[in-house]
Length: 582
Image (cartoon, rainbow, N blue to C red):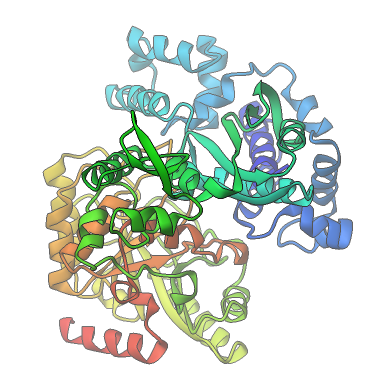
């Protein structure tokens, strides 16, 4: 059972309780927080449980004895009796409606009880019937947003975010390694290229006993059913809802097979064309002299480096293999030296209990220090969305004092007093300039009005960028994978304005966002706009930019393209240099 699957169970409980409407809201919030925490853990719950049992689980932030017992039951049985109990009477497809942007538990309850909506399809029929527009609080715009959300969900059908799939794929690989049957085993396909969403899991292995490996693979606890089981290739349908393929190949051709099954298709086609021009043919079995019809001697197959060398290319990182110019760059010997996990020196977008985070400023700072970071910006929300807590005119003094207290209590790390400030519909900010001037770091973000025109959205962001106190634009396209499509933007205009005003554009590393997208990052590099990779952590376990680094590598980014690879002294100079703007 993966962390994502456990988190999904708690999220499901919270949603069902909210829909039923007869549960203490604090209890619902506890399940929501638990889901958020578990989903952001960098270590597997099973490992933590094996280390210290129930007490280890209770030691997690916000996880008391009741929740720890439920986690224990899930880990031991792959199910939860409490969930089964509260699911009674709830149509199986009802919760899928909550994946549609703008449809929360209250609206879902209304749709179910008043209109007998039970799933996405019945919601679509109702939305198209014209009946919803007549309900108080539901206008034409809301209904159109629902229909747009249904379309987006269908487009994502059969695909899941990398944050759900990569940990699962890594678990499967580790489980197969533990059998001792595999000499070598690697993730391939779009997951190896670190695509933000993937449709399946591809795994490649070598073994002296392929049939035993297939048996182990097909009987893993992650498997719902076996689609096809062969001697060297098997396909299973996983409980998470996608296929996984395992191929066992001969050790001598592993490199050729890994290159072939990593893709992308466009990259492979381009490389094979180069091979033909050099008088060789290329496949998953190796590089051979001659043509596909008249194969000669095997030239290369053992490693990917050998495969690339046969066509006159250096090794190309998997993240770059999209035929976006990587072959031309390799030929000119100008492939980027991609950013690495160890390059980030700070995190400039985090939240604490001062707004919607789950842990205190001090706790967040201690965790950042423990991770080896030189600096952290606490950027609690300053929001126009009716958030009870957060940074306002009435609370900013208290917030700044809390930051000062944290600086005294947590020496050895630089703690910046920041805010994530809402960009309003007209491009102005929720906080006035005199309040912004009191902060060390300002991230400006859009959190509402997502469906304006391309021109309006672009003008809105440009105006925010021009505010002299704004240091960065947070999750610039506002997308949430599978739930909210990006706002329509002239991305070149926004990136150019950011470059002009010395404002960083954020790559939000949350695995449900990964915003900016890879193509935007590549364009930002071309336009020399500065990128900042932040976790958007709402807990200490969320202080993880792993997926952001992956996305940055897909966008061809190097260390010097990223603001928070700078050591503290250089970041401080960058901040000092911006004061001229004010």
